[in-house]
Structure formats: C-alpha cells, structure tokens
Length: 340
Image 1 (cartoon, rainbow, N blue to C red):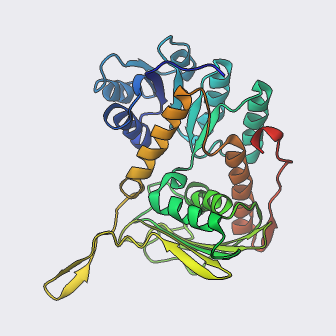
Image 2 (tube, helix red, strand yellow):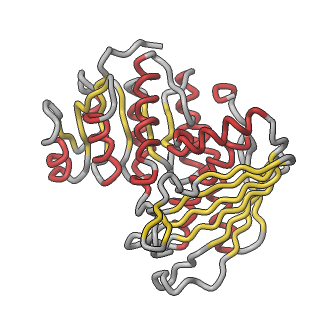
C-alpha cells in the first residue's frame, strides 16, 4: 500500500454542521494533516468554510477535488444519498476515505460499495462510527475483552436528543440515531444482529405530529444476547447516550455524565450536553487523529465498509419492524475475507 506524504492533504466533502466541524478539527486539533479542498453543492457555503483555511480550494464536484494533486485523502460528510458516488470516485483515485455514517442509506448500495472495495483488494474506507473512539466506550470494550465479567447476556441502551430537526420522520429515529447502537452492539459484544423488533408507546406530547417518538428497539444477536434501545429524540432536556452491559458475573455502565457534580445552595447536580458534537467532541478528535495516523502509515483501520453494510441491513429490518410490526430477521451476505 502506498505510503502517504508526511502532511496529509484532505478534501472534506460536505460543509454542513458535521463537515465544517471536521474542517475546524483538522486545522486546529489534528496533527499531520491539513484541509486542501472543500466540496459542497452549495458553493457559497463551501466558500465561507474555505475562507478560514489558507490555500484551501472550493469545488462543487467531489471527483474534481479528488483529482487535485494536493488531495491525499477524503472525509465524506455529505448527506447519505450522495455517499455511494463519492466513495466510488475515491476508489477510482485510490484515496483512503473517512466516511461519516451511513456508509450508504440502504443495504443494496452498501453492498455495491463493499464489492467495489473488494475489487481493489484492500481496504480504503473507515466508517465514522465515532462511539468506538469515546473514552468510556473504549474502557467498556476493554473490560468485556478481559472476560472477567463473563459472557454478555443483555445490553441496555438509552439515546435521547433535545429535539428532532425539522423534517424528521419516524423512520429517521432508526436510520439516523439507532444506527449508532447497532454498531455499538456489534462492536462491544462482537456479535452480529440477527433480528429486530420495534415497539412504540403513545407518542410524547413533545414529538411533532406524525412522529412515533419515543421507540423501544430490541435486537437479537448470533451470540445469544438480547439488546434494547430506548430512542427518544424529543426529550426536551438534553442529549444523553448511556449503555449498560449485563454479564454472567457483573454489570458495567457508561454515559452517566458524572464527570463533574456540584453541591451548592441545597442542591446537587451536573450539566447535560445539548448535542452530539458536544457529548462526543473528544471521540471525534480521537477518531480523526487515528484515521490520519493510519493513513500516513499506509494503513486503513477502524470500522470497515462491512460494518457500514451490516448496520444498513439492520436498519432495513428495523424500519420494516416499525412499519409492519413483529419480529423481522436481518439478512446479511457472507462476510468477505477482506473484512475477516
């Protein structure tokens, strides 16, 4: 695999909230890389973001940016439906990619990306499941790997947002939020998800009309574990992500947010993060730095295109379970040797 230059030239595709934050991160936090190009169909927005970076060029076509001599790697932070074309273009230029989730919006297109990467004979994609780089989740993963708590039996997850963005649907609670718990489940337990059931109470009065919020999602795994996810995207009070693993000889929990607890005026308490960028700022920093470091070594590490495909397949089963009710099996192709 080709060794990349000492300072990595990165093209950031998509300059919305996530893409703009990645531009800031690479310029201000990450070592060994610089942003050399930004891409967005909204040229004015891209120009505004590029103006903060010396020597950064602006493009409206991802392929044009990838053809630039000063682009050695790509971050894809555009909307999901645009990912497949950008990924295939990156493969044509043999560029390593950090692709924000989803890999693609559905299992069929994710499988096409998987097959295209296999034809290269090596990995080019790291998928942006940033919770794998969160300090608390990393400690939980390390603890489970020791085996001292015994076999995982159940995993309880809570995922709450202050309010859903305009235009959200009931299905987006799964495709845009529970997708993280799908990856966390597979990563923490080292199991594949085999079936999904989705239950929904009477919607909260906080939820916009027509949105089934909250939802209670149940996964079954090939390792015999049962996993539940409470997803509540209009809780009104803050952004919370919590997980508790119940094992044969003990339990372990992360996400309580008690790093700082105050006692004053007859009350005790702390602060609840208000969005995902605040809660997972360190995880995003760690994720991007790990990607840059690996790319400079000529390697690709972290969540793979297989992980992105597997989550897309679970999403499809979960959406079907939401819409039709009942238990829906997850259909996966055979795992290729490249991702073993």
